[in-house]
Each structure stands twice: as structure tokens, then as C-alpha cells.
Length: 118
Image (cartoon, rainbow, N blue to C red; front, side, top):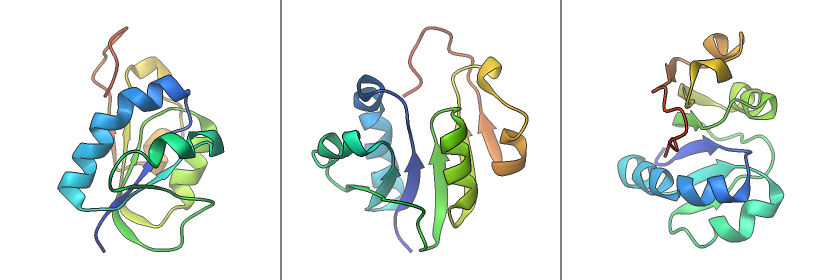
């Protein structure tokens, strides 16, 4: 199936900065990128072509899922979502928790410090 899942529950400004990454995922995997995020982020996501808001836990399989934050809520949604390959992108190792290695096939931690991950 075309498209992928993205999981992100941080602040609205962080979501704005994530837009280039979502666009790259859309271009790579095809549309739509189904984004699991806060309800209040939906109006902003509607402005990004090929990105849809995913309510609840998805039932349809996708080949890839990308999680962009260390929050427990994001980890649980990632764990429950049907995707063959699950990747987590975190800015620093200090944000990793014990369960990340059990949920995600790949942890990408570029140690960015104050620079933004997207």
C-alpha cells in the first residue's frame, strides 16, 4: 500500500518545522502520509498536500512508520499501528527510553543538541 504513517505529539511550532520531513516522506513513499498527532494540529496538517490526519489507531497496513518524538503516547501508538518497518527519530540519546529498542526496528539519533531534527 502506498503511503506511510508518521507519529508526532509535540507542540504546534515543532510540527511546522516537521513539514519538510513529512513532504519528503510523501515524495518517497507516495501519498498519503497519515499523521497521528494531537487533535489541534489537524487544521495545519490539512494545509500540507498529501498529508492526512489519522484518528485513533489505524487498521490498514503500511510498509513504514516514522515516530518523531520520545513521548510515551507516541510510542504506544507506534507499537499498536500495523507497519512492517518502524523507525524512531530522536534528537539526542538522553530522550531514548528503555522501550524504544523493543518497538522500533531502527533508532536514528543524530545528537543534534539545540538544532532541530527535521
